[in-house]
Structure formats: structure tokens, C-alpha cells
Amino acid sequence: MMRLAALLYSLIATALAGTAVIAVLTAGTVSALAIVGAAAVGAVAALPASWLVAKRLYQ
Image (cartoon, rainbow, N blue to C red):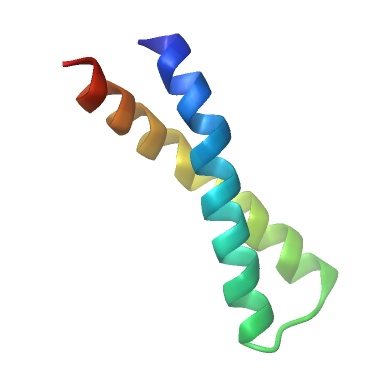
């Protein structure tokens, strides 16, 4: 299940980080710190999400 979660993480993290960056840019915050912070939040949020999706798929 760990390999499946790792594979899913690569897909889910890019989707969540990209969505967070687009949300920050749409809000008008164009500083580098805000963009990198949004990408980091998306990458961290993808950890439990990918684990839950892998768990659900594995069952």
C-alpha cells in the first residue's frame, strides 16, 4: 500500500499545490513567499489525502 500511496502522492500533490498557487494568484497576492507557501501547504495536505485514497483503493 505504501507504493500505491507514493504513486498517488505524486499526482495528488501536484494537483493540490497547483490549485493552492492558482488560488493565491487569483487573490492578488503575487509575492514569492505566498506562492511558495501555498505550494508547500498543498504538498503537505496531499500526504494524508494520498494515504486515504490508497487505503480506499487497496480495500
